[in-house]
Image (cartoon, rainbow, N blue to C red; front, side):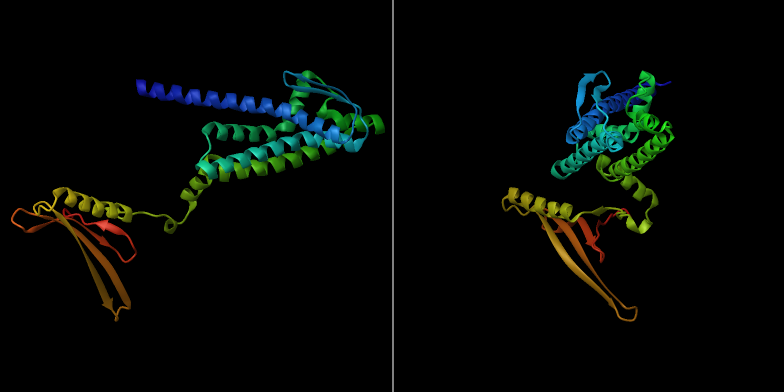
Length: 292
């Protein structure tokens, strides 16, 4: 393959690798914040905590079980704390967009990766607990509680799945709104609009159309050049504006156009046309091409 193709392929591979590392880092941070959220909930519930120490994949949290309400809160509050952190990151991104028009690319990637992590928070916790074979961990709290109380943990599994599904829907909704309306200054909604919008919603300039700012710059440049000539008539430029009105009552329309022309004075005193423009009825300003 050509060298340029290999370079592009290598660059794309590096981008995917960096994005994957960002996703792994965000998921890793999520696991710590999840346990911090659970710890805060237990503190607020005045639950005795026997151990809260860091490990490689989070915090080891040990506490005394009080009742079903506490266990449901433990399952929910860690994920909800991650949801709160994600909302704060979303707000920070929006604030940066308002203050400096855009957020750094690193911020966009981290927030999106963190959002993906919290969507699959419960699944990641379940996988971690199964790998560690910790049957007393968070994913099995309600199962163990109902099994110890009623001798059957089926109800605990049902409630756990219901809570996990509700949190999945909530976090998916928040991530969807971030990706569509905030991520990369709303690039997704812009792309969707470009693909699906009606043709009348697009602005397509005319051939040789210029802005009013560009036309004012031309007039200003003419004045500056004339000042440099210091009164010498030869080579001076002039601008003329002519208003045209076409009134046709029989067809029921009144059309107004503006013609702007710039001239250069020759050595013999005659004027030669330099550039000319027309301002249409709809406000568009177009330069007239002599070759067409």
